[in-house]
Length: 186
Image (cartoon, rainbow, N blue to C red; front, side, top):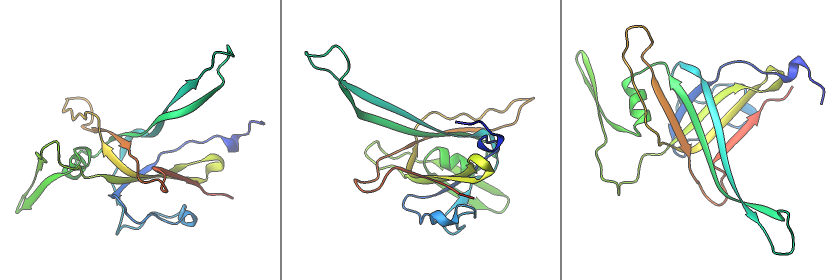
């Protein structure tokens, strides 16, 4: 591998959210913003948007060999993490997996969902556009996501008020992968 500056990348990603099952942009549209009718820009982020994958492989062993003879993937967790720099009620609803919003003359309000644990949560789709090598675009689509970790909103004298967010990707079907990644090419 030869190291060239064109293989290095730098730059922010733009995060969008949509309903679970939202129409995905075609791979050929990787250089254009997704349709506003299906995808909503969540606004500015702080410290980037991060995709992580935690893979667990179970070791296969036999009495006749001292070495590992193989491994099988037995668990995989994809996560999307970011800090939402715009602590709007809409973004609060996003990190709390829904709730009830209301508005009137001079106010907006939000109350989190207080359904039972038997209630199926409101899964979302996530899409973020960032950069790949050669400063070309990379799009990541998480098809079925749910905010699964704690979040925090801090109001302090000397720092921005932000919302921390972490979403877990979930199984979609036997024929649809939980995530899709596409890079633009030159």
